Length: 163
Length: 164
Image 1: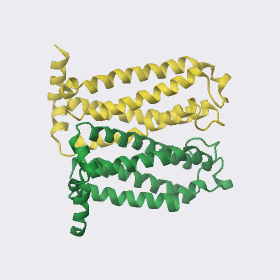
Image 2: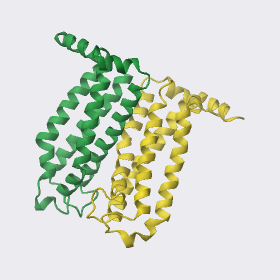
Image 3: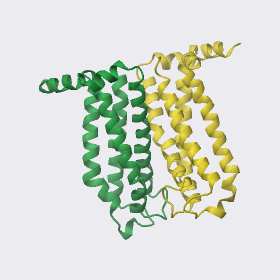
């Protein structure tokens, strides 16, 4: 079974079909996905800016990051759940979209960047917690996260267009 | 409302409107900037509101969190309004007949009015009570109103494309 036929099967399921054909459900899921950007990427931005040494410099980097983290996860949970349903009801369109494929790749890269940060320089946060400008490795993680998320948003929005 | 039709027609026919309509990529590109700015604008508001409710950054005074986020709030608002005006110009007549657009403009007016008259004062006030704790009841109510108004703008904005 090819990926394409799996996508076809997925969007032909009862759930896929009913979301796609509903008047209200699709717009509600889609709008939630867009507005929850503020809780997911919006909060990531704040901790990225601290890592880059731009805001809240007088506060420990770990404090800025840790306190916002549970809320960030709530935001991303909303994104993932609504995202799955959006994919479910239009899997073939997504499969055929270069923007969707790019988005998936970039999401994986963003996850790797976050894990590499946590397992790397963040393990030694005690040494740079109060630094106004964190070490290069942390700054790079912040910049990478910011650029990746901007690109992911672009891919997500542009998926809706057919050029 | 029909008295404003000539204005909407004029908006629909500017050189900028036509240029955006004639380009295949201009509208999506501008829309992407509108969406980035939404993320920053609503994201920084969410952080500030969480702080006012005492849920994060309790060691920082509310006014300090507010000033750290202020530049981001301001430039994202500027990008939001600029990109929003461009999007509007390119489809002004469509917007005229669109109920969601009218509701969005109402929410936008109220959100800006509330933010610059009341909300900004509640977050700038440096009271002993606001340090190390959550905001007083008045501050929390203002935070909840600001959050509802700005998310209302976003909600109605997304509805322009869905509902008409």
